Amino acid sequence: MTGIQQKSQRRQRRLFAAIAGWALLGAASTGIVACTNAAAQEATSSAHSAATSNSAPSSTAPTSTSSSSASASTSSAAPTSSEAAASSSTAEPTNTAAAAGTYADGTYTATGSYSSPGGTETISISLTLSDDVITAATAEGEATGGPSSQYQGEFEENFAALIVGKDIDDVSLDKVAGSSLTSGGFNAAVETIKSDALA
Amino acid sequence: MHSHSRRRLEFEAIGTHWQIDTDLQLTTDQWSAIDQRIEEFDRTWSRFRSDSLVSKVAAGPGSFAFPPDAGPLFAFYRRLYELTGGAVTPLIGGALEHLGYDAEYRLSALPGRPTTPDWDAVMTWDGNTLDTAGPVVLDVGAAGKGYLVDIIGELLLSMGVTTYVVDGSGDLAHRGPDVLRVGMEHPADPSKVIGVVPLGNACLAASAANRRAWGSPDRALHHIVDPASGDPVGDVVATWVVAHSAMVADGLATALFFLEPAARGTLESDFGARWARVTSAGAAQWSPQFEGELFR
Image (cartoon, rainbow over all chains, first blue to last red; front, side):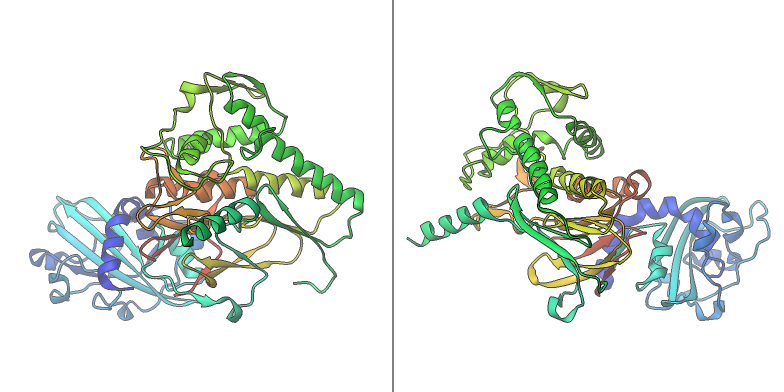
């Protein structure tokens, strides 16, 4: 999918993602935080702790791998502004409770990666903090298919910008389901109309 | 597929092609019982035959006693109606006729925009009887075929057939130990598939705007019509739903042409239905638990 289409879809998914953000943050146990607000760079010890969630289904908890492999500059990450790439200051999330006034206001983006039977998957999370309160949270899964996309998908719809067709003959199938095959009257009428149009 | 032999019956009914596969050989009497059941359904619901119950309703107003199996279909339609804010409605028949999808297959639209009445303004359903305030054209095309697939499956079960595939041309009910691989037909090219859905002890419905289509290049028409605008829907071109019943899968496959993200998010939790759909831009969306693999 192209970045532009992806972005457009992201906008569509904001509502879902915002709702899902809490649950997902609990599940994504690894992450690197890149702050999109330069003033907040010192405060990148992450809002992760504020986002613990008991609503994350245990079956969805991704296997944590080295967070160093998770980079906000990976192509699948979705920085909320161009500053994200520049402000490469990163930090491991901590689980200490946030003290009042700890975090600078701004939008934080974290990308976590984990390995799964389907390959390496990433989840990108954005949080907007204002006075230490999370005012917005979004999550984007970047699973490439297979079981992992199902796990991530518990939080959002899956999306592919462009479907790809394969020849029916090249795929082993028992049935094909698509538009209802019609018969009898409808097809006959269409044929009549076509021949009338040619007359 | 298993190696044990399968018995297949193919036939045309309610305007479409059917295939029923069973592991046991059915007797002639059993097949004719299935045939009769389909005929019964058609006699109630087909707006394409003048002797059907819905044709009598169309000549109303009146009070019409329906057969017992109408209850679940009306009840489900009411859920669909509420889920979609009135977009999926059995009252769409009038709009379809207006656009040319009528008993004579006129296939040319009348002038003006068709309007679709509000459910509560024109009819009440009490569980057995439909009371109408005027002539209303019912069309249960959004869930009726799936419901008939369920009915045939139940009938097979009652005959002791526990391994079967009922395929009502896009609406599938599967029961048995094997798992079917069902191709998702490419909405723009029937020689291609865009994915594969495994189907085992579940039902699948597909809906697409490309086949039951008519009209001209200026005004392309098809059978999924938005009652609010009176026009066929345009943003979504194909949908697939897997659910525990073919009626639910069928109805939601139509609903998916209309649903916004928040409502789509309720299909898994409220209906136990997993789904995928393709937009007119060629993009795909699918629900978290959708079993299928889409090619990318």
